[in-house]
Image (cartoon, rainbow, N blue to C red; front, top):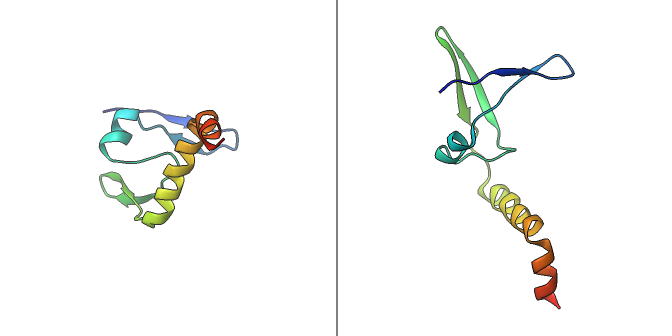
Length: 75
């Protein structure tokens, strides 16, 4: 799989991971990755996060997505 490094306004670069790769690696926007430099290139490795933090982020995403429906159910 190939991707590009996109230039950001501050001069740094951003690597965009395709949605199917995020899904297969069980990664979400906001997850941290460790960058390991090797003689052959780089390795991106997920940083183990606190399960509670990840669950809370997932809960907030669901609540944001279904905010209107949840408000109606709360009445």
